[in-house]
Image (cartoon, rainbow over all chains, first blue to last red; front, side, top):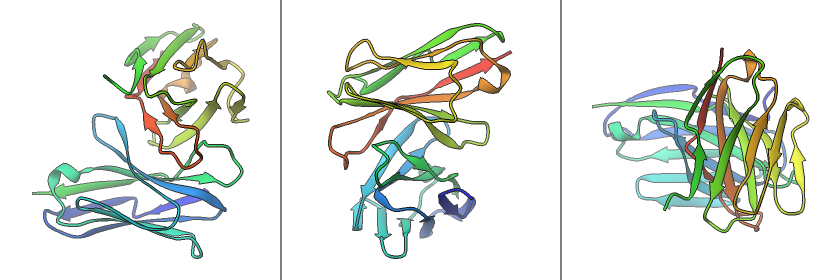
Length: 110
Length: 113
């Protein structure tokens, strides 16, 4: 079983919908990252958080340390949000490398 | 002004060959990483390295070796390439603090024939 589990694996939404992607992890962590990988392949860091909530534009990321769970929300989704969203954690005591979830493929239809 | 760059972007080679992928970062970071993304898009750490220590994922074959000529570069050397090495390889870097985000290179798609 992977230490980081994401759901759903695939998500199709209509433009304008509110989207939630979930991430659960089974280990102690020092930080959690949300990454975006576009069809062209490049990976961009969206958020890094260790507690609470962060917001950037239409993106919101939350984390509940006690429940070992994080969510990524996209408000007013747009076709350009179509990408793979990846949750990754830095396991406590494991230096700085990341352990990744398997990703969520999001497709937003116009 | 690219933050993390990798060359080449595509690499096609025959089984048994030795090849290198170069990575450079101009962010002044002191820690660099190599990740492998398999055909199912799953990312996995291969190495993390700063001036003081190299941490190797124990699942990485010793045909793979990182070489760091200086703090801004971490190259990946692969000996005796195998079909299963075909993947996309990403370089990344981060700063000293344990809470710094990582910046990724554009990836190198390696195809072994």
